[in-house]
Length: 312
Image 1 (cartoon, rainbow, N blue to C red):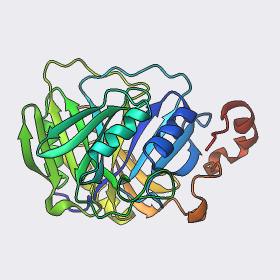
Image 2 (spheres, rainbow, N blue to C red):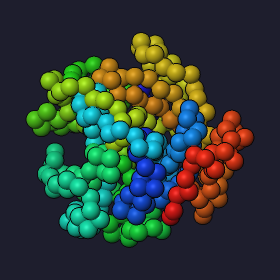
Image 3 (tube, helix red, strand yellow):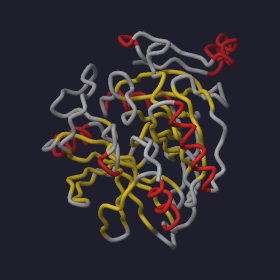
């Protein structure tokens, strides 16, 4: 069993409009945009990162906003819900706040013993806010105060046709079965993990159609390890177990490896180093357009013809 996994690192999804996406996360949810860069494989598309003050592992939601992208189709083989931690007693405030912002499909739930608020993102993305005793320091430099601000991720919920092999994989990654109710089984890192984002839920729906990726879909979910040495240990263990794992890829703000899970969800293992302040002062994270070195020569054409300015 692996011991290097700290919990979630980030979750990356697809959007249809960069400005709408930015406004939802920075104004409606009150997160900080910690990086404005581009998709490594499609530099004409932004890659936007939102999180706490410095983009700590376990807090960062990232997006590829492909202009006018078609909506994804919900189904099996995807991350269906991304949940954030909020302070105890703040769910009612959030319900009123989201309604005032025009957020759709807001629903209060009692879910596995927790007070939870489900709602949709601008592209039909599945989100939830979960009341927890979470002592992580939130970002309060935007639209939220400390009594209500998001602390970081609580969990992700995968929707699978068959959960058996993925449950075995999570066990290998250090997760233990914690609870279940109906179609939902909860797994959490033994000892609670190192970064507060330690929960994975699996919803098993044998008759669900396969999901089709598009706007509102999660592209991949990333797990945190401390450094490159730990990442190489994880990579070797996964390969030895039979998984097809990519070589280590430099993503500027972390190093990454990827592999496809038995249920169809793409997993990433990302390092906590070097962090989002490697090329910007912490006071100005996410303000300037940062380009990967291989795309630096495209700055003029990207800013002129492809990347519309984002208004803060």
